[in-house]
Length: 246
Image (cartoon, rainbow, N blue to C red; front, side, top):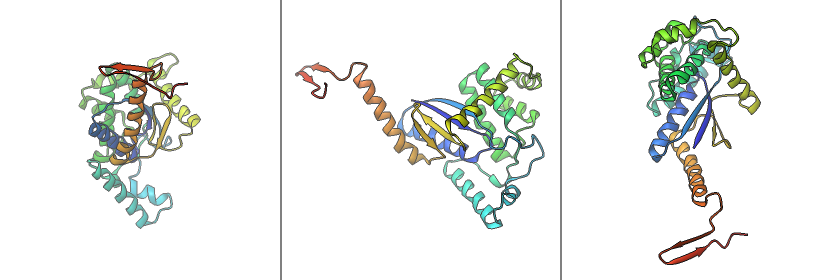
């Protein structure tokens, strides 16, 4: 199974949805190949000096009670997924460089290292309340996950000249976002299973398990059929014929 998904480190439901997905796979005893694509919920957010969640919700027109309810909803969903959320204190910050660093780490240190870094970025944003647009913070967080912070610093400091790795990775982030628009992705998280099943939004673990079971059963049937269909099979008691064949 391959799962392609768009996500942003400033998206609480992305962290919750991805955590529930991983828990569902573990519960089912199955595995999947993941491909993360970058998405920025607030591409114009400041790198540093942003506001916390509550005043931003009020600025969007929510009442005091509605804002409190929204924060409580996220915190409770996070707690149900086993995540240490404190959504109200999250500081809005630009995530473009965080996406760049993740792609850099995946290119040089592998997907497992990149997924570990993603988890650290989410936790830093929603639990530690750091400014994820701060290059110093990104280098420190990378170092905490075993990535040489000096390499990350050099990457972030490199000019975005045409043909350089820094520019290529920056363009890859923009390409992910362009693909989202052309695919019809307007919010995250957004998952595509095996290139044909779209799952918008964050499911709970039970919801993921129900859906994944069906897809895994479909995959198992396809493997059993093979490229030539069911055909004729023979065993100790003789042969059986698939009478549904044309």
